[in-house]
Image (tube, rainbow, N blue to C red; front, side, top):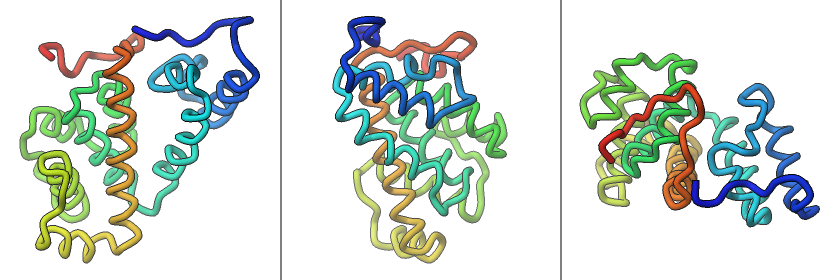
Length: 186
């Protein structure tokens, strides 16, 4: 890790407030969640971390289904080959009801065999990652599937996790103990 989180007495009041907000908002994930993923990095610029927290919360409380959300997140993780991101959301995706085979198909760019909302989420997220756009025909189908609000939520979720992925990659945030490297050749 290029930038470990600040420790002990070196924390400023702003860093401590951010760390407390991370810990409070993510109980049950890891005892030291403030040290993991992008959270440890963002402690070095706590105003950015504080600004990101409500967006992360919005992704978890959006009206789109947990499976749709996780498909978008996993596609962003694959695109950026963000090891921690993908490994963490593999677990969350499984808890949301995605199968190992579906997640593996997303990881390798294959066809998970989705239909309905899940298939549409995969198409939208891959289009955004491949071209940074959604073509008109796909946009119309996605809006019909998710409604305007749901489509904004999906696009915003993918965008947020692109920022998370880039943060993880730039600072070479390592996998947590027990996480399997999804991109060992990257």
